[in-house]
Length: 170
Picture 1 (cartoon, rainbow, N blue to C red):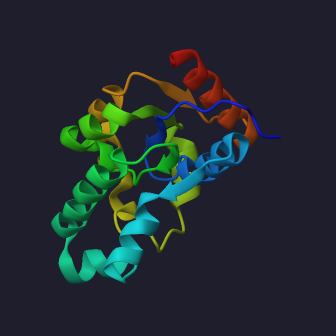
Picture 2: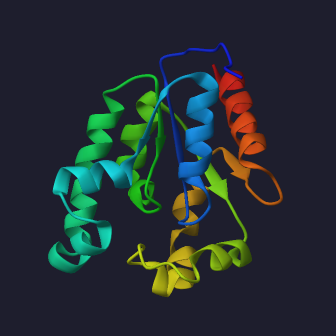
């Protein structure tokens, strides 16, 4: 069911790895009939490597440079639904750039849910030390004013809440 609502702002979903940014973002995009962008997918397409390959061959700093450039590019666009990588908006400059043209929502999950989703992850180069990273990123995520919990809810329920919050903000 498409929802008729079309302000020019982008909807930007962020949060820790494994919270469901891509899944929820796709549902939001479907409901509001917008293009969905996963920043990790765009970076892998631009660089021509998987994220683990980028980290192995070029390092995390190079990956973060790619995120910074992409944040600027996406902030210049309108009417997108964007799922960021878990660390993209930890950088305050990226967060500020995306906030200028986007409605930012941080998706929250419990450490137990995150652990269950990451336990066998080979595609996430930072998953091995996820708990330290989770703790280190909490202050950055807290700087985002709008939070939505994913606990005990379906992707459609979460997407609907994001849309309602976005609608109320315009």
